[in-house]
Length: 121
Picture (cartoon, rainbow, N blue to C red):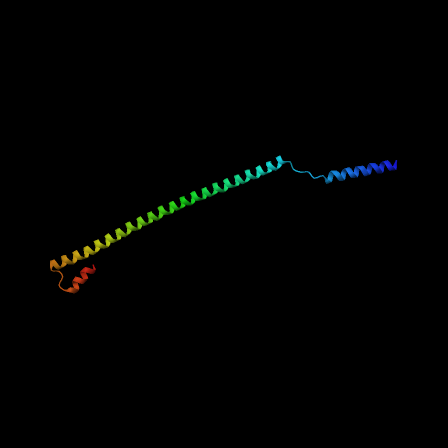
């Protein structure tokens, strides 16, 4: 009886050892499926990066457009202000000359000093 139990135990151990040593080789279909999943994942990643790059480029272009418009508006405003300043300065200068000429014509200016004072006004 002991011999039978020992034999059964040895057979059980051998069976267990053989099962645990068996290598399970993947089926080709599983490899293809895994490779297909990897390709799909990479394709999705590439599309996401491309979409992100397009979005960032569009945003940058919009920012450049806005900055260009603001700069153009600033230049236009500055040009208008400069033109107005030049116009005012020219008008004031003309008024001074006109006042000096009127004073000289009216005979109210008697000396060069008074002419200079009239010009300063």
